[in-house]
Length: 410
Image (cartoon, rainbow, N blue to C red; front, side, top):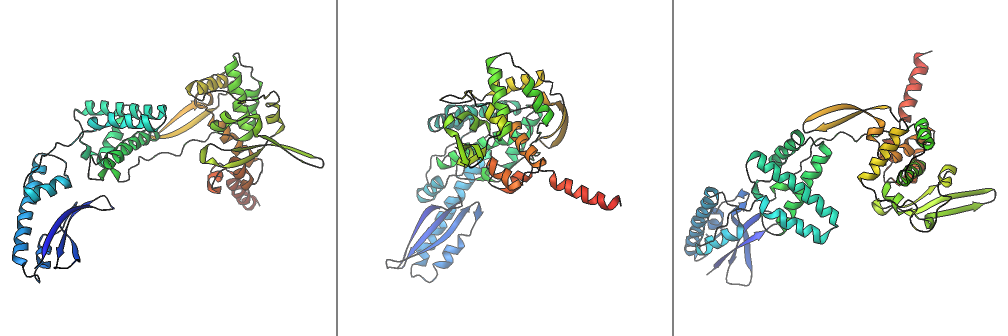
């Protein structure tokens, strides 16, 4: 005699199956997957075939047929009522014929809980970013007059939502991808909480994003910035921090952490080299950066505490733009960007688009252009890969041009 047992099982892939165990009167079980495997259908007949050699196969097959019929009933219910397929409910239904069917949750049902979760587990401003992202999502649902169920979220949803952000909000693709990423994080949380049993949301989706512009300043433009005398104390601080970054390649996060204790001195006969010895915020990379005489002149009055004591925010970049405009950094820059499925171009004066990251671009590009070996530049700025540093280099092109012209101009 044998006994058959059924139970639901969540697989590593995130899919679900209904499994069976057939006992042959010993302690060993023959575990086989049968029935409905989400999202792929396997055949109930397989279970019946496996029972052929068992003495009470007729009883077992009768039970399997009964389960199959009830499972079909449940499938009909969740398709007809547009509810989310729930493996636990399905299992209960085919076991006892009863289930309390719940309507599928909407995104609006769960994202307030998720924002509260983020507020408890991350920094306050990070939670605020999620709140802003879901405000856009709510406006999108009002725009199309439809509330999305949690099970609606898939690559098609990302595409439609992304096009809305591009066309109605005029977001560029880097912003769109960031907002879609926050929806994906919400969905991962919903899956962990067992609000959904599907991972359709997890398929890769990414709007094409043009390589972010790298617009290094020229020597003459750095001179213009250095010659300008700001009117306010805050503008003087921002000017000094930006110019120091042009001399060291520091990211703004490392400028903000910089203290006198990070300044070290190397000495040998006839040589003194001041350098920065710090751990970069991004990637926690230990880094040493030699300090030029211009960089050292900006540190002469450094006292205890943070050297560049400012909070990096929109106000810092606004101040930098005002300084650049007053210093007449008017060079026209062509910007190429993607908005949804469109590639667009626009011309902006340098002072309108300048930001603190331009200083890092400037440091890398000028050193490469003046002949410093790329491996040294890489180590100065703390790049993990040489390929990242070489993005800034035009030297390979220049070498190719020179060699070509040598032959052509013979």
